[in-house]
Amino acid sequence: MIARAREPLIFEHSRPGRAARAQWPAASAEDERSAEHIPPALLRRRPAALPELSELDVVRHYTRLSQLNFSIDTHFYPLGSCTMKYNPKACNAAALLPEFLARHPLSPPELSQGFLACVYELQEMLKAITGMRGVALSPLAGAHGEFAGVAMIRAYHRSRGDPTRNEILVPQAAHGTNPATATMCGCVAREIPVDADGDVDLSALRAALGPRTAGIMLTNPSTLGVFERRIEEVARLVHAAGGLLYYDGANLNAILGKVRPGDMGFDVMHVNLHKTFSTPHGGGGPGAGPVGVAQRLLPFLPLPIVGRDGGPASAEGGGESESDDRGESDDRGEGQSVRYRWLDERDLPQSIGRLAGFGGNAGVLLRAYVYLRLLGREGLQRVAEFATLNANYLSARLQQVGYDAAYPRRRASHEFILTLRRQAQELGVTAMDVAKRLLDLGFHAPTTYFPLLISECLLIEPTETESKETLDAFVTAMTRILQEAREDPERLQRAPYTLPVRRLDDVHAARELDLAYRERRPQESSDAAAS
Ligand SMILES: *Cc1c(COP(=O)(O)O)cnc(C)c1O
Image (tube, rainbow, N blue to C red; front, side, top):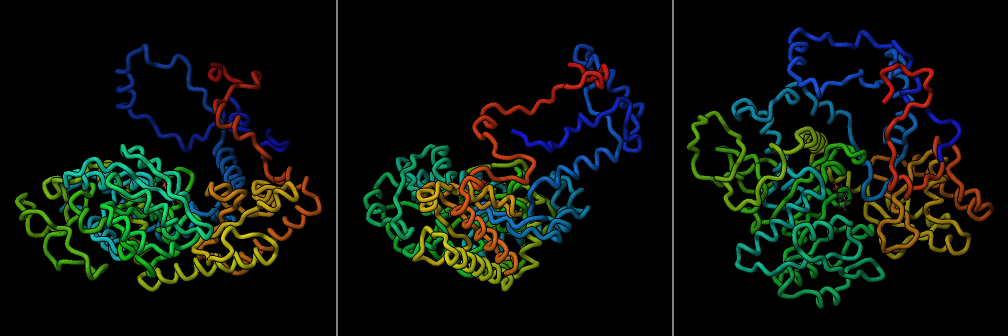
């Protein structure tokens, strides 16, 4: 499976006795003594089988590995829906200020006013952006925010003596996390079809609504890359049936500063700070999926939330937002000077509870805070304008050179879908073949085979920060691929050619994942490496 020029494993660079001594921390006498308390049965009999290398060996090894990868710092990355959007280095630098890094999560609010003020203002800015009345920042991912949202929907129905509502409607095009979340929260997910133009099928929606309806989960623009035009009608129908509307706001780039889920009629939503708001998405790093709610769900928000005692009723972020301080007067003896504090169960007795240690992923929250401060209101609108302009430009150019859009009659949002259905039938070339060949030509592949609704699809999101030159270069590569598909389809079917690995057996890799290193060259092994 692995191509000829395989990168050696770090163990294969190892030479007995080699080390980076300058990097060794000296063991203190105290360290030595504490080791004596470990029961002998638990002590290693031989040293750990670690590779032995010089400092330069290690630096070069990992630098080389990092260059084998595609990354946002090296390549255009149009991976629709879960795109690597703009992650300014400045936001990261500010989030890593030593004062933030060194703050202990249990430090008292008197010593954390700066941090708490940032978190409070982030809550306020997200309220203003989404049109929601309350925001809690602690969920750690998009799916985690969805879990909080559906838990609040259930808590709401229970609090009204209506506990049998357990159906969550999910349009066909939804992200897979939506039905999964509904199921995890003890609800039944019920699929609603979409019509040929990508809008929710209203007659199917009407037929599905009833006394069991807890709510509907949808995103707008949808994962089909189009804006649901009858969203107000959808909201009216669901509300009339007694259900609530959940907005999957994982990707807000198309609507920032333009449309607000709260104004479309949504009651609860999450946003992915690790997509739209300056934390890199992918690679499994930390994320944040804050939730926002309309008035009627305020009592159920997850804790903690940062509240402000004193000062004007609302911060600069949103004219219509209310103070989060809904508690009784402060009897905790924190003193007059404390302005910001964590709200707890005494403030919000009906809360669905705590979903994360402390306040969530502080570094991710701070990056989002700095990003929003950098952009400001006008900057956010520019994000939406350029995200949609770039997507529509790229979609139009790719159709010009011969690709088929899944929804040719619709304008793109921040992303759009091509379908290779015709090429698959006529030339035997699939969406995967195009994706793999793009890697040879220096582009990260778009999202493939999602949404499931469209066969042989590529979901493409150029993002607002790519230049016209980059988009044109992508069109040139896609044009060349289409030409190869016609002239030499077999060449495409075997791509990629230039990467350290070729086509992998995905099933084998997933089912029989093998990450353990086993010694291969015994003549170079030290006694320690044997296992
Ligand atoms: C990414 C995404 C999610 C899930 O977010 P995670 O942080 O990966 O859990 C949900 N919905 C949509 C539309 C997404 O793009």
